[in-house]
Image (cartoon, rainbow, N blue to C red; front, side, top):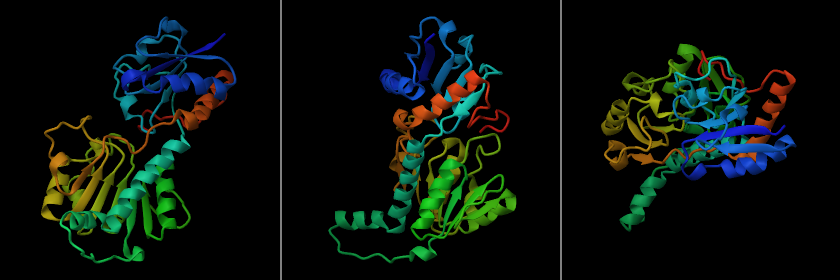
Length: 315
């Protein structure tokens, strides 16, 4: 019997459903029918859902659903659905392609700030040959908030470039060459020693609104903030105040409370903010199909799933 999978996404034009139709059967080694929501036909056929920002209640309409796969590393987009089937397991895709993209984004903006490229771009516009002061790499301290797969990859690569790097997570981690911190005292230390702060935390009830005025005040003067996690971590008015006061030198923001970011939002025109439209990392079916196929095999064989989500923890 052919496995039937629902692709449920808010992406326009069917999103990546054609790629999943081609790549998932190759990864699983058998026929797979991938149906794009809302044109899924008989809902009782569907056993697996590939979901990204699914409409409220959509997953609850699939009576024989055995597995929910988040098409993003974060799962807050699923857990906010109060009609989510309570017993259906949820797994994340461990996508090396997405992890690499996220690291590329973080490293690019860290280096752009470190080497003062915005200043040189301004000098070019003004037709000025002007050399800016340079901070030695060994003196530019980088902090990574969140030490899951993405955070560890970023921290590892930043360290290889010669930056003193620390990472923080709620529970203890170990990573060669990186100062790993945890708990409230560890978070305080991370903030006070981070000239560049990169946020890749999951959005959970514990982390909503944590980047507020008190949080930002602990960063060194002139610190730079990169957010590629979720907009819900940030109190926008407090971040804008820290930028306007000069306490922060700038911010690169890829995620927001409301997406698309409203055209009237202050971030768009702020001289110290660079806005990107949630593109730091996108699940790549080419690199993610194997992870999905593995969990399909496991659930069929009654083996433990990998990269499962704890609904209570939110990740």
